[in-house]
Length: 327
Image 1 (cartoon, helix red, strand yellow):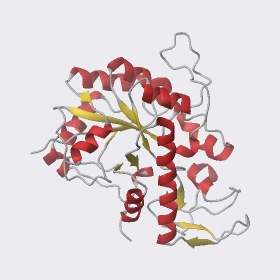
Image 2 (cartoon, rainbow, N blue to C red):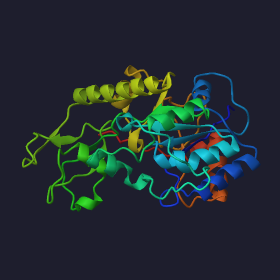
Image 3 (cartoon, one colour):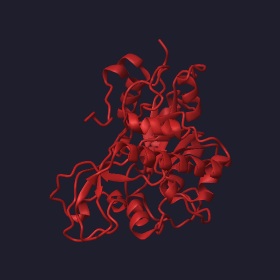
Image 4 (cartoon, rainbow, N blue to C red):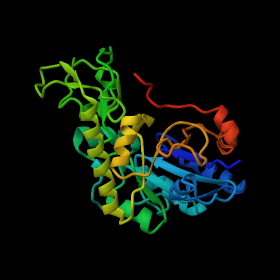
């Protein structure tokens, strides 16, 4: 039986949201003390495509979104334990700037740095992407610290997945909706949202701010949108690093055959899902399984999740898919 390689999925590492730096350090300490060692995401892809099996107790570590706190709080701990990770970048929010201090800098005041919980609102509503890592920091991760990057689409766009209105207040709406409406106004109708890459979706018929009528996008329009987004993301990452961008991850974990077709056409070899299950030769390359990590997960639970993910039989029994159901 071919071994399964767990892929851990993290997002924000911060004292104020997501997983705390102390929890993250405890995870890496446990992994190191129990014989686990990280391998690059590229090595996992090569293995699943028929390459050599990785060493026993190998895992890959990924971060979606490229939040600044990955640089501030996660990267120093990764360096301390010699762990290599891969970071998923939504390239519309790439920006220039100086290398900001991280938690390894003695006496650095990190309190004024933007945090992940505000990242999307700042970027989409105020055109301020500074809660994401900048180009200088991303290059340092790749060139100086040995990490990798993968695509997370260009804009991480949401769409309305239904035209049945919700009784939600504006504060409950995902910030991705700001890419659907040109402007959000009080009293404006809201609808269930999902990934614009996995749903044809419903969109405003016109740019008239007073016109709330929605129309459904066609499949051909979605393919064109996906292909443009995925290609632009890949090209910007390759321009940034000088290396091929082989993989991407699906926003919100949602994907379907149309999205996969577009990703293939855009030049990707694989995509990371939020499905659980085994990563063995024969696993669909555009639905790589991941172990979801969140705040409150202790080392005992980490061990349980890894025991399932590393065993192809157990992983198959506990497999769960977040793929969009067929209409």
